[in-house]
Amino acid sequence: MAGVRSVIPAFAALLAAQTTQTQPAQAQTNASLDAGRRLAATHCGRCHAVDRRDQSPDPRAPRLRNLGANFPFAGLRDALRQHMIVGHPEMPVVSLNPTEIGDLMTYLRSIQGPARSGRSKERDT
Image 1 (cartoon, rainbow, N blue to C red):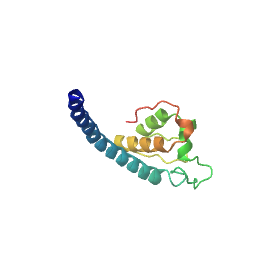
Image 2 (cartoon, helix red, strand yellow):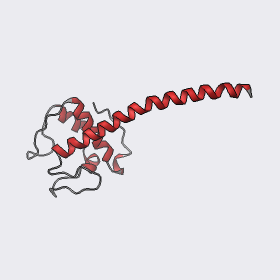
Image 3 (cartoon, helix red, strand yellow):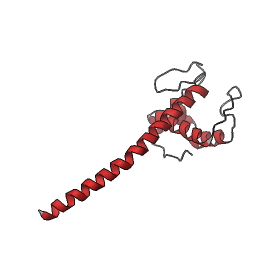
Image 4 (cartoon, rainbow, N blue to C red):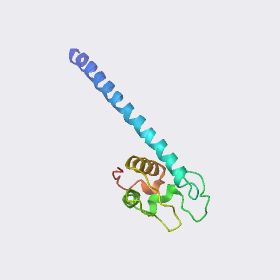
């Protein structure tokens, strides 16, 4: 029984350390998602549906939640880094810094439908 008593404090300390480390990471992820959502609304929302349930204002524009089913995220990330037009000539050229690109990619990944879930995750920044 003495061995169990010595393990419990060690386990509690380990659990507390993991919880403390997880909270800042979760807050950072939430901030990135929020920032990415705002970027999508600002730069894409005029034509595209930017949430999980809304409809695209322009019926020709795909919903961002379906983007991952037909477009490789690495290609989108690279195009944004190079300030290239992605899609078609009517799309505006958007100039984002590396943090904004990471935030937008984090948000886009978070809203993808089930068809995206089987693919491997790529690094976004």
